[in-house]
Image (cartoon, rainbow, N blue to C red; front, side, top):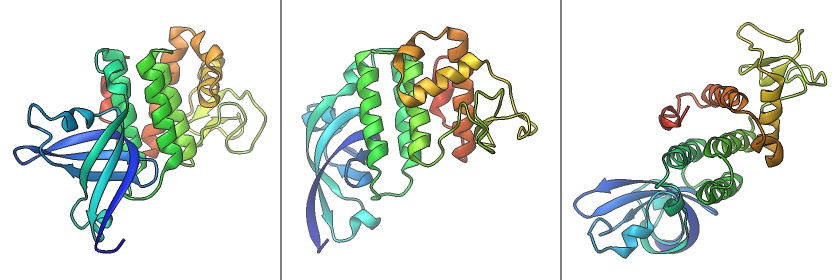
Length: 251
């Protein structure tokens, strides 16, 4: 990168942390550089328009200034400019169900992009699409969250099966479901701890994974609740420690 470099990228603000009197550390998931942490100077002063743009849920175009190999962890780059692409927060933070679902999405995206500076384009595109859908109120927030969680698992190599047996491939639908085995399992492959969800719940989860919103939107609340429980258990199995923010999502 040479000794000093400017680079631009667009990203979603995942979170902000206070730094000193007036500054913040901003964590973003960017299109081209994966997860980036950078310092934004002076943004906590009341009149900072720059700071208002760098709030969680915001989709922004940011210019960064890095000295030498800072992106690899020696100090942090500076955010020197930012322009709003879409202020998704305005359609999310005013509604409790949307806010809690959105917060769980941001935390999930951060957890699935543990290594800074590594591109994670599919995860980035999933997050942008999910926040847009959430902010517009097109579907129930819990369904948007569960679809995002399932697709995040899938793009990171952990796609659950909701029909064919995850172990032997026996064509579904199969009755049993095992988080540890990768989803639906047949009677021969079932392991201790397998559950027997409603077939409608498995149908719903398959619909969320593939983007079949007509099926998902028509689903009864009890199947949505059961499905959310399975998604949450599956996610916790693959992320070593649980998501703090999922506890606040309306049950």
